[in-house]
Image (cartoon, rainbow, N blue to C red; front, top):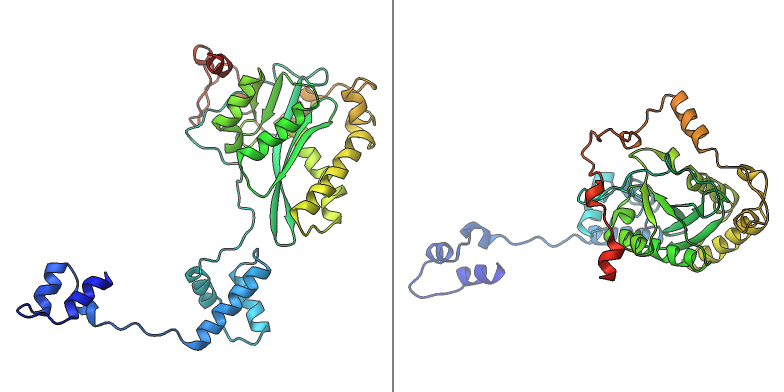
Length: 328
């Protein structure tokens, strides 16, 4: 564009500027516009904003505005918002609905109603949560055996992607055990082809919660509360390495030393290995309690019902048998 403007304003014998602008497709008035230099006080303000952002990237323009006023700058939040947009600075924080699924992905039915877990390694559940660092966030993925509540595998990653889930699954399988079913929510990490392929190749059935049904995956949700109140909220993590070491030590203690009230105050590792006997997971009791509280059953819970919101159901004749396809 600038080159064409230069050709319009430059000297050319026989062609007027208007004709040259028309031939080059350039507005003639734009050739006379001279951009104003950025004022020095604005440059100084932008440098201050960048320094504040690099120190605390999770702060938005409102907090940055207040920090600038503390430094003596008389500035409006609208100007800070505009300048941060020009510098492409956006606050780093966990957005809502981190586990949104892709509409093109297949959603599998919820299997635990018809197949409640009776012994260890019948069902594992998996989920993702975020942990706050001093200058950002990391994501913790964990797989838990539903009956014993033992953490079979976990992974901490700075990225919210499927690879972190696959790394946690690989760690869980290194224990030498394999579940019959793995239950998850409908997040895009768990509806992705990579995750589904891996489970089907291993011969593990895929189960997914209904939309907005946190009670369907209640063991892992309860574990998030435990790990955050007993470990995360009591510490301040500076680096990813530090949070990995701290969470690793806690999970080792949780599995082998901590007595879990949900399994009769037994230790999860002892129940998982068959050393101790746990109470049966009261799955039906949880579902009945949800109904008493007025929580309606999700359409995926009804075997003969068709979901009203357009989720693809897995039909019997089109059941994905990826293990046979890959083997072929």
